[in-house]
Length: 623
Image (tube, rainbow, N blue to C red; front, side):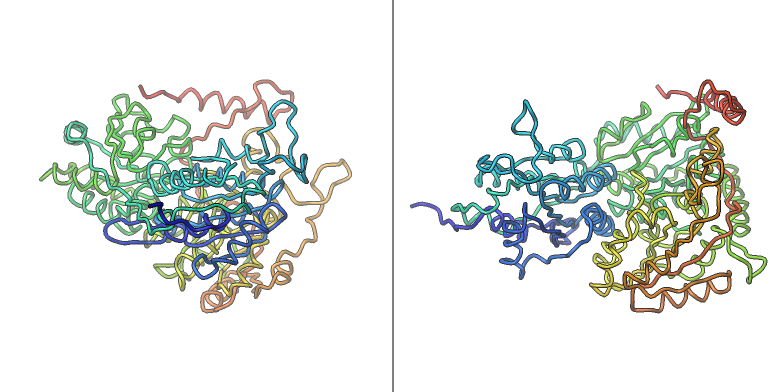
């Protein structure tokens, strides 16, 4: 007797399949693909578009305005839910598909799941070439979607209906696997989307993908315990893996038992509450003084769920103790082996719990603990000074904006940022009060991420106040999803800081001999440089034209009032403020390697190279 089948198009079968996929961890079950974002064109309107209409009752649809920003929204959603639930994004062929590449790179670099469903050329090659098809002279099977291969954790082009079955299962496996996850791409030829096939009924059965918590290997665990017991100045570097595995309580218990202090990467900030005596704040180029001081003298660095970017290691110059060794607890062997470390390849929560069980009575010295606590108190004075406004009627500085926001938000509000000068100030100064309050996308540091990601966070956590912090440069990159927030009635708050240019890169340009060339938003002066008057661009009016309520704040006092009003509002609200450009953030406590011209005639570049040569001499390789 033949198995039961159902005759559907490939697109219909895919949508129906996705609606029946679930994850489960610690007994909690979630939809794996909770909804689909889409912009329709000829490459997906009659296939995936029709399927989404057919199954609107089981697959929620979200209308986007830009393909890249739809991916950002999906990434924000997945991060808020600790990678246990994701969203899909469908686009047409051609520019709609290639607009996905930046978002896909961001997802994969940050180890966050998103399913991409771009349309593709006809598998049959019947109308060849068709509109927007890339004609490669020697490879007829190449399309623009192949640009997604290097930024996807799994990629397939579905050239026959039945090929969807194994590929869809592989796609779900990768999305749900914390050691493998990232962007997954299923390219869908336009004709195959609409082609009917007799699908086995079991393909549509409810399927649960269990998210594992692998325990550490006993041999690795014993070596890790020995290393911790031998260390005199251990330091934990908490990365995003702490949050993804929901290991915050396990980390807190481990720290309170052992006294080992915690410094955080951008992704790991909030692993401990800011007021915990062992939380030292950010580490690396944008870290706190106390974190970086301890890092320079640490004899054991315990990385938990971090991939050690150049900002964290200060481009290889931070960990200067000649005897320093690394112990990396990570769910991926690839990251665990970095810096020639001892490894614990396991789930972060599981690993921390096993370490705690194996270290009864172990604790760092009282002198070490007293030293880092004193350093934390000194840094808190730095934060207070940066946040404090001597004159409430003055134009606020950027750090005073952060101070006003710090006073306005609740413990469970989410603050989102990704690029510009704000990430550095936030990493040094922000006082995280809950695991998800600090949402910094710094793996790809993608301008334009904040507003769509805010929408994704609000979809994942309805009722949670969300704040997207953007400078004028970032806002101009991608404000379009404001329309989506208005359409969906999401009370997204945008704090828009106007400083007339790329402040972060302007400062870096000056430091590296570039003389701030091309970083200001100004008219051309008589000599042709962009040093004239600021451009008469009204970004507040632009936000209002897209449907937001806009509150303009000219002083610190008005800013505090506007932030309070925005938090109380049930509408999308933009707080617009021009900031005093004078730098008020504490300077970098560690280096970042941006190579400087080795030969130049201009004095600024010559001096910058001399500084660079002094700094690069401190780099070391950990072997």
